[in-house]
Image (cartoon, rainbow, N blue to C red; front, side, top):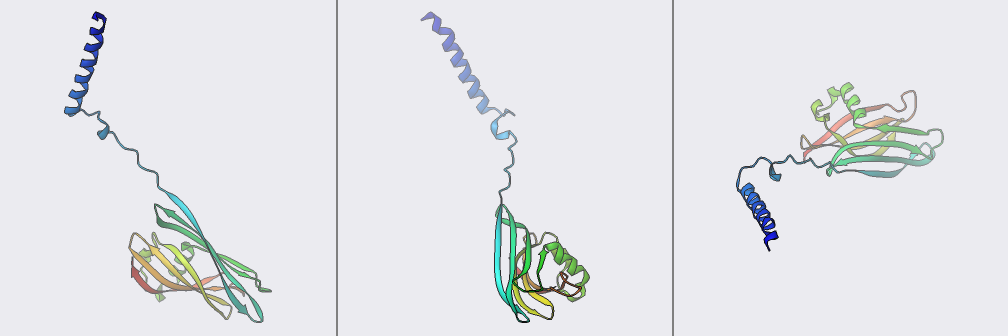
Length: 179
């Protein structure tokens, strides 16, 4: 029994030390430790849509495919590819990104009601095919800018033949909606 005294004394002194630390303003408590930031949750979503079209006597399809990047459930990036398929003499493919629309907006800003600052942080949410006429494919587009809390519905045109093949032109903002 006498050999157990040092064990009891050690246990009691440890408990007193722990209790004293809980009541003090000790700088080394776990609550004061810097917390590691959580890594953002990033995921990708692929989109694809096919629209029937006719150029001259040839029937084919306009295909729009894209990849969207989300960070913590917020759309932060996207890129789309527009292709003409199954139409003789007009094999065509063009990548469309926000940079493509920025370049068009800078050239044709006199026709646009959208402030250039909107494009900082904006991403393409969706693209829809509208029609074909006179060497040109016509599209509707939805841009989203979460930092400005706005969504813009607009349109652009894309040459699919002649020496202007692949040129995007005619960007117009049709409406601006608050998110």
